[in-house]
Length: 261
Image (cartoon, rainbow, N blue to C red; front, side, top):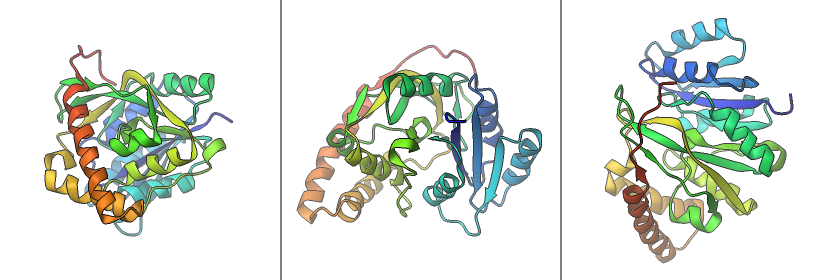
């Protein structure tokens, strides 16, 4: 099963949305996958819901963390358990278009791409998508330092080239740091400018809603994770903010919603 895709989902108190997430994987037109869900010490009904799906489909697998460690380390547990050549990510409150894996995997195989991502719909809680966000067709190491153009629930990488690439042990911006580290090794990552993921913003404590948090965590990425000087970290952070707000403003595209899961 050379093209097996391992889908990693960290779960924490996701009882409201986890069924939509899992059903969107079950409904994929590409069926050579395993869905690895890592519960990060939920105290709601998440585990009970996931176990019901595990009983129905052996491709769905549940692992439970011993202590709450955050989404990054929960994803790392999933990566460790993964058996697939391709690693992809799906947050518990997001879900996929039914052709997501089929289109993205074909895109990777046909073009020998190592790391890919897609455009995505943005919606709030139970409402239909309000817009979709376009992505660059190519993202380099230099470009990813300017803004995190790769949304985690859209990403997929090839372990045959990278091996198993893990998230850093930080609570915020761990996905961005992973893409930076991958792009230090490969020339470019590539995007599919078709929205194949549904991103639920109403349930997330987004850094974009907390400008001081954005400044703090981005500075820490440059200073602590990338070992830049204090001055260089400030300059890189200012450059990031300019690209970030430009992208958030001009990458929004209105588009009629075409169905659910």
